[in-house]
Figure (spheres, rainbow, N blue to C red):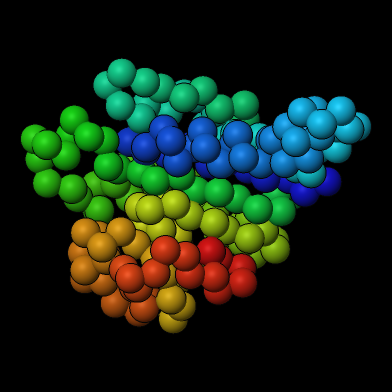
Length: 174
């Protein structure tokens, strides 16, 4: 069974954390349950934050992880949720990737370590910012929202940002 870690990000979009959790958890179980077949979970899904504390995703919602990053053992895939795009903040101030990285800096060494240990790193939307800051996208193609790709290119010029792609698969980083 493959271990999937959904990494909760400060200022993230809850849907980019919850949806992958539900998809990976239901693989091999939901269809089987609906059709009277034995349940065969395909993935062990856990959630983590830098320190194991709840992560505030908006002024209305916080997500509570199961683990701190230090407690995660040998993940096969780490899914990095979007971060720094809180709707309330966006309508009152400009999006600042430097500030987003600073708020989530404690995640960067873990992304580097897990990647070096063989985990595939998958990002959603602005989660690519953290992969870029961790150095995981150097010289690679990456996908970002069309509204963010130009901004990210200013900060990470050695990443080939492709706003026109929905997914870029570089093997060890998606």
